Image 1 (tube, rainbow, N blue to C red):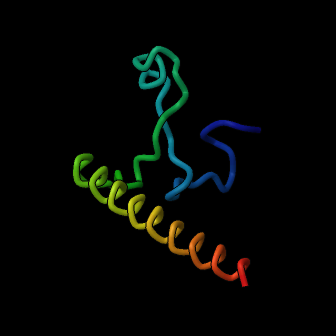
Image 2: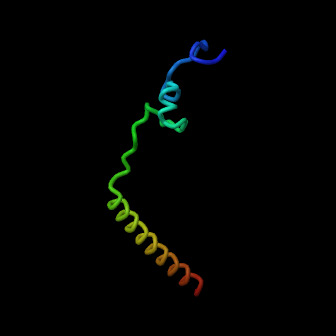
Image 3: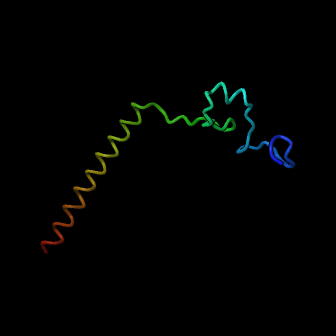
Length: 76
């Protein structure tokens, strides 16, 4: 037997109840986010892009250094 009367059915951080009225109000969209989680704040997009650009420049610099070291080693 399923439904609300099923034995042992408990709400937890990963299992929660939603009423039929809530589902109907959402246009029957069942993609309902967990109400027990806190939305992540990923920070300011402009600041994140600046950090990404700086990391990419550093990566390119390290790539060039490694390439130079390997070229010198192969010429020996």
